[in-house]
Amino acid sequence: MERVSLTRTIPADSETVTGLITDVAPFMRAAGFDEVTLDGDDLGITNRVGLFEIELDLEIVETDAVLRYEQREGIFESMMTEYRIEAVDDGTEVTATTEYSALDLPVLGEMLDSTVVSRQRTKELNRQFDWLVEQVPSR
Image (cartoon, rainbow, N blue to C red; front, side, top):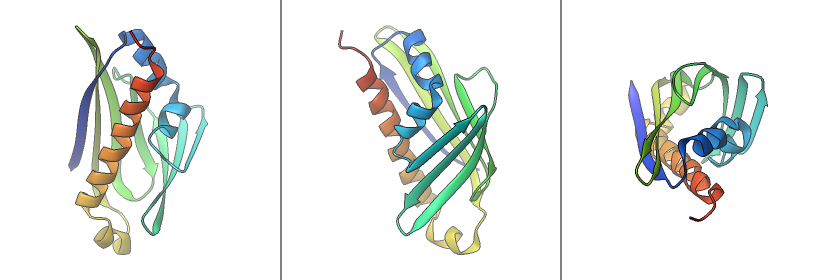
C-alpha cells in the first residue's frame, strides 16, 4: 500500500474549514481535476495526466473524518482519501491522506508508477490546501 499524506494549518476555525471541505464539488475542483461530478455520495473525477485520461468512480463514506472517499472503479486496485482536522492555536490543521495499492492497468501501471502518482497527488492536495486558504477572509 502506497501513501501520500500532507498537513497544513489553515488560518480559520474548524467549523469554517469543515464547511469548505464538506462542500465537496468545489473542494474537489480545487485539486485541479478536469471534471468533477457529485450525485449524493457518488463522486466522479476525471483528470488528464500526461497522455492519459484517468477516471475514478468514488463513494463518499461516513467516518469520523471530515471527508473520506473510496474508489469503486478506477485505475487502482484500491484507493481511499480522507481529510482530518484538528484545532490548533493559529487555526485548523488539516491532514489529507491518500492510500492506494497498485495500478490496475497493465500498460499504465508501467508508465504511471508510484513516484508519478505520488507527485501528482501531492500537487492536487496542495492545490486544495491553497484553495482553503484563499477562501478564508484575512484576519
